[in-house]
Length: 139
Image (cartoon, rainbow, N blue to C red; front, side, top):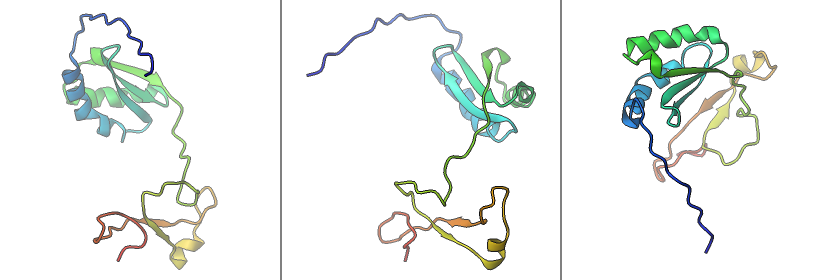
């Protein structure tokens, strides 16, 4: 049996309980991620606040407006500057396990090139009725 280490627990007074933070977070997080420059959202339990990662601090205003619309107090919000998100995988990468999907090209789309020089392709998700799973070999 492995040795279990116990750490001391020190309760402390907070302004908002977790359920209140989660309620605010659930109302604004997904919408905030659609705003330009917002790359991260988090419930920061240790500091009793909501944290938003933005690529530039000038993007704070749009998030603050969203928060005000949803009656989230400004005192509960913290902003951090983050690097922009850079996709690491595409349908052309070898990445396992596959979630499922099929890729096809159409002649007119194949001739178009995006900014990275790759052919533009469409990804399709299909459900296999027999198994309830997903994959390119649907029937």
